[in-house]
Every structure is written in C-alpha cells, then in structure tokens.
Image 1 (spheres, rainbow, N blue to C red):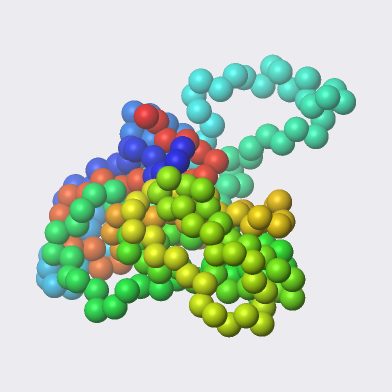
Image 2: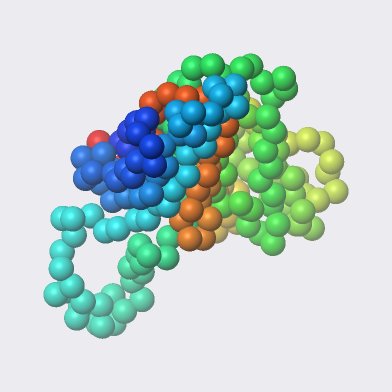
Length: 231
C-alpha cells in the first residue's frame, strides 16, 4: 500500500489486558501481550504511561497449502524468493489517531537517514508528522535522493561526502514514502510518517515499547512493508 494500512487493536483500561488483532483488524499481523496503559492503572496523568508488547507476522489465511512446493524445485522457480514470516523485522507499531493532551513540541524534530556503502541506513525510518529528515552522504561517490510518492515528492539532486550543505526534507503528511537513488538501483528506503510521536520500532524479537502515552483508549496499528493491511 501507499501508506500506513488500516486496522489494529483497540486498547482498553483493564489491568494487564492482553489484546490480539483479529483477522478483520490486521489481516496478516497479530499483536500479542499488549499491556494496558500505565496511566490507566493509577499513575498520574501528567506522567503518562507505556504500551508494550510483541508483534509477529503470519501468512494470510487464504494462502494455498504447501502442495505446490514441488514447482519450486524446477529451474524456472528454483531461485524465486518466498517470504519467511518468522524472520521479518522492521515492524513499526503506532497509535493511529489524534492524541489529546499532546503538548506542542519546543522545536521541530530531526531524524537522519545516512547514505553509506551504497545503501540507506536505516532501511525503514518511522517519524511523526512535521519531522525534518536529513540525508547525509558518507560515501566517496555521488548519490541522489528522490521520491515520487504522493505523500511527499522531492529530489535532492546529486552530491557526495564532502558537500556539507544540509540536504533535508520536512515530512508534513502521514503515509508511506518510498525513497530511491537515481544512480544505484538497489538503494531504496522507506519513511513511514505517522500521525503523532507515539510509535516504536520493534526489535529483532518483535518487542516494542511506546512511552509517555497520555491516558485514553487508542487504536494501534502494526506495520511492515511486506505485509499488506486489510482494506
């Protein structure tokens, strides 16, 4: 899809409530062990609370069984990649709605995606709406940073390491932005612009933690570039 997919789990105020995404919420993802907001468990509202949990991906229920695996042994499909859902990383979990009691930020948040060894690092960068992303080139060769996304279209031109002029973009609308280099075909990254600063990138084991969330009931979305949401 072109942006954060719909769906997600709803967080309620029961103590240590465990929530799981239903097929109607997130078709191929499941959020497990999501703890209720600490702010709803007796902590002062000013302190906020946390949402923690684990996210995994699984194949869509309509996927065919393994009876067709023999075809993959043929020369035609021998090197065709199949997704191993157990090995997926780079999940992003975020609150997909406006959040009350959100104090204005003192300054514009800044994030960085580095061009190094002819690749973008990180491959997936989640940012809140209004964030400025800088694109330094750490290589001794020219790179180009551009996107034709409907969410944010831009072209930073060609530059290499010694050019110190800031190359940056402000992401002012939520959604997925695919970014490429016009010189190197394998250079690709994703900026996932989410509607508020309450998001987290899961670790290698799928664990995530969203801190300082005001008390309330929220819709969570788990996102991955290879796992489409249900529309």
